[in-house]
Image (cartoon, rainbow, N blue to C red; front, top):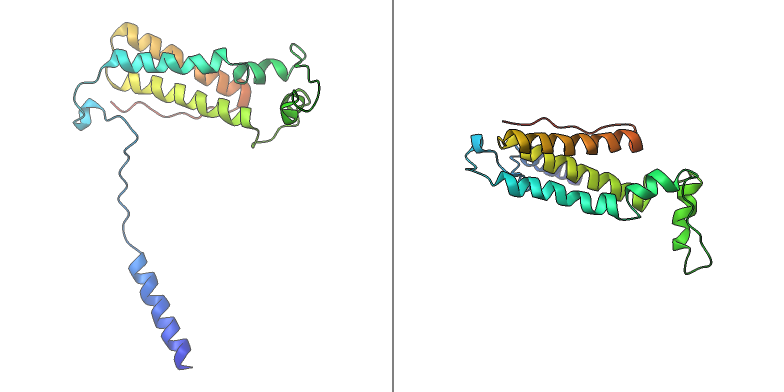
Length: 159
């Protein structure tokens, strides 16, 4: 009985000490000028957003694979164990992929990076031309999100 009381008191003290306020520091975000971040090179931020397009639109295992291989427009021939890529292309063509499919995850993450980088450009008071280009890139990412996944993750611009 004495052991039970000691355990109850010990667990109670552990629970009381574990309930504290958590202050999170986000170190992976670019701070906006209104929060003391200073002036940013908006041209470099916009260039970073354009660089995000390289893999998305040029690699055959990104948007192309989800847009074309899942339809009858493209069929990737497989000829044996070493050419089969573990059935990746057959899974896409047969529409039998799930959320763990590598290409579906990769495209989702890369579209999110494009949308985030374009939104970051808009947060730093770009020129009219830079703002229009960043808005187009963000809208392009949102179009592919809607077309491929049926939903658009969205965050607002903090100015």
